[in-house]
Image (tube, rainbow, N blue to C red; front, top):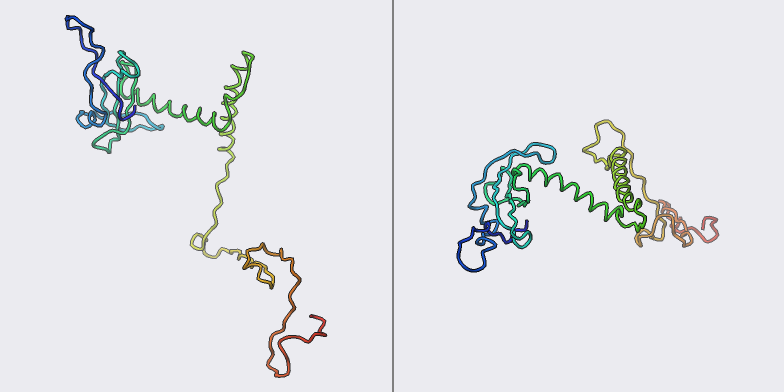
Amino acid sequence: MKSNAALHAPKPPRTGKRGRPAKKGQRLGKLAAIAATADCGQIEVCRLGRRQQMHVHAFQALFYDVWGERPVQIVLARRATRTEGYDIALVSMDMHATAAEIIEDYDERWSIEVCIEDAKQITGVGEARNRVKHAVERTVPFGLICQSLAICCTRSTAVPSRTSRTAADTPAGTATSATPPTKTCSHGCAARRLPPNTCRLPPAPLTHEKSAAPHQHSTPPLDNPET
């Protein structure tokens, strides 16, 4: 339920006076105000495959804008570690169900809703345009089966992601491969963010290192074969 849901007390009995009988009782406060003054009890529920302790407060009311005069049961639930407010408000038309049963049914239904949403948005279940009766009855279940097989296959054959090891994660004595240096040309293509080994310019003239002899020049003469 939304936090601003309009709740009313159950329909009062007839007064015997003239006029139209009341269809709903007086307006109840908002869910936050009800949870603040409610005496919550602690129960054990099965959520996410394990037993958990929760604080709940269940009461009956009329959700007149949705179900009219039919009474409904509302459950305000919160974690055991929380001392005030509520985490979620659930509503059910089953007046004989316990608060634990309503919470467990909602938990089971949530996984089904997520599955249907993924089937419509990812695998396209329900988008087929069939006219034959058997095709209409079989296409959606077949799409859900294919989605389940794809998920099972992915989970059974998934490989853990390989992250790069740092020096702290590498055991002592383990040989590590150094990163090879990037080859760049003499025209400064790396500064222009060009990929390595893609320079189309002619090679620059080779130069020799300056020697200690005073008569040798750093630039070779023009008749040098290396020019």
